[in-house]
Amino acid sequence: EAGVAQSPRYKIIEKRQSVAFWCNPISGHATLYWYQQILGQGPKLLIQFQNNGVVDDSQLPKDRFSAERLKGVDSTLKIQPAKLEDSAVYLCASSGGLAGIYEQYFGPGTRLTVT
Amino acid sequence: AQSVTQLDSQVPVFEEAPVELRCNYSSSVSVYLFWYVQYPNQGLQLLLKYLSGSTLVESINGFEAEFNKSQTSFHLRKPSVHISDTAEYFCAVSERTGRRALTFGSGTRLQVQP
Image 1 (tube, rainbow over the protein chains, first blue to last red):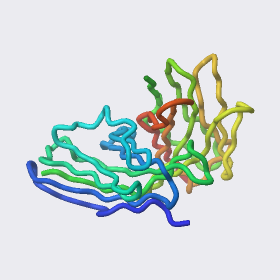
Image 2: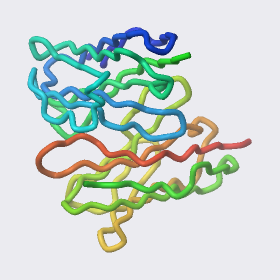
Image 3: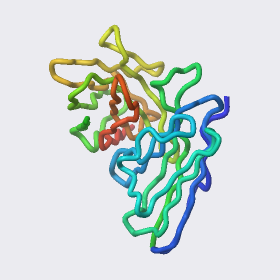
Image 4: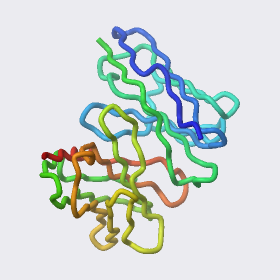
């Protein structure tokens, strides 16, 4: 079974530029999560999708971050414009299928550096 | 809302010695408990989980954790560590009902020395 795929793996941009991250969850997983992991901290939820609907986006900075999950499969997370404090690893995770709804599988992450 | 506290940011230990990584949580609702491991330059992997039943849960590589409801703890232990156990370990909780997103602690870096 293929794991959660993310791209790009690394991205360096200047502040005020925009950036987009892509995630392809494990096939058949209905729930998809985006987490932000700042250096030295644990991951923090940004947004949770159930199929193509948003379950929780209470911690998403909506003035600059947006996310979508078209057709309930792939998802894109965008930052526009980026700030220095957005430098972090962005993790995508999915759950569902035979493993059940409680076990989340994580992708390798996208490391964003904002200069 | 939930919160997770990992009291030790770094734990250095010699190979074959025992280790305990501490985790305490706070929640107004019932939760499930997890330990994730992040090896250098790799993604997060589930190490073990407590959903229900026996309060002692084990992983395939010798780690175990015990859920203590009265002390709201879920400490991770291994009786004898290997160099290959060097990694960052994250304790996490999720609500038993409703949204199932994980709330993570800040992580503990386990450094196993020869």
